[in-house]
Amino acid sequence: MKTIIGLAARGDGIADDGSYYASTAPGDSVQDDGTIVPGPHHAAPVCPHFGTCGGCQLQHIDDHAYADFLRDRIRSALSAQGIAFERFEEAHVSPTHSRRRAALTAERKGRQVLLGFNEASSHRITDVRSCAVLDPHLEDLVAPLRRLLATLLPERKRATVRMTCADQGVDLLLAGVDVEGLAATESLTEFAAHHKLARLSIDEGFGPSARWEPQPVTITLGAVPVALPEGAFLQATPQGEAALVNAVRHAVANRIAIADLFAGLGTFALSIDGVTYAAEGGRDPLIALQASARKAGKQIACEHRDLFRRALSPDELDRFDAVILDPPRAGAKEQVEQLAKSRVACIAYASCNPSTFARDAKLLIDAGYRLDSIKPVGQFRWSTHVELAATFNR
Image (tube, rainbow, N blue to C red; front, side, top):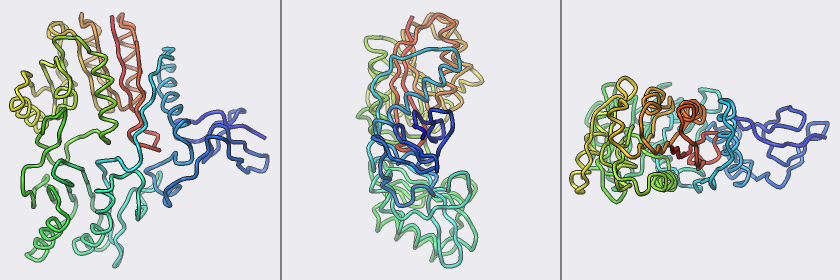
């Protein structure tokens, strides 16, 4: 008999002899005939689609084991760069029914419309009837959307459905559908009005175009309403966003001049006192941030800047007491190389990819920075997607 002692990066259990077993949790036992004997951290999946839908891989483990998985993924990535680290803060795991944004795929087959997430390692669609991670406002739209798309999608045609919980309601973007004729246009308007949507936009291949928006759509960040461009990035859950913001706020506490790099809509810039400069490569998010900061009376210099092609130089960075980094999955290698040459005393790094974070962390540590803390964040509950907020000082 073998004992499961941990979880691999893709969620398979690792036995004490180094072998891998799907759908096992730490503490489970695997008998010689392959039978799994559940241990103390094995949980009953709450979703009928688990095992088929590719959205969740870890519903069979409890929250304690999931928190350990988050820490282990980060620890493993750092170890691959020769960094030993154990000073983890308590991991955040977002609750069920808290995901405020989601992208689903739809396909029409005869009279039936499949709508859901892709199956694991496949282009096949799991036709979602319920979802334990989606905010109820999003989950409640799935069945009505299936009926709407039955009138818009041609046979075998696929579309993408993006839903986001905004201040005014659900912001809905349909990509890959053709809305032609008065009847189709009226059906969209009736759907949006009946379901009290904040906005309904269509992307027919030329970019999103709003077809319904009774009032400007906003998302509140740090008590400041910010205009929400169609398809703009937003942290997956309000609870995960709060965990990241609190960790970064603690990291840069008492710093006077702070730069927020890869600022997006202003998740950190609008929530943390002391931010005086924000750089963002996306034009629409930056315009929204700039306008909202001005209305809120926050003195933040906003710059439209591609930090991959034109990272801030050491001379520019040395104006700041602290820097906040929140790059995409590719990390911030080009900017970190410049930070390594700077005199910035504190760096708060929010990451959605432990591997690129570890690569960047090595550059900073080799340059004299000290990695003081890491808070693991599991916004994508029951998935293998790991996020974190880390603090570097020197």
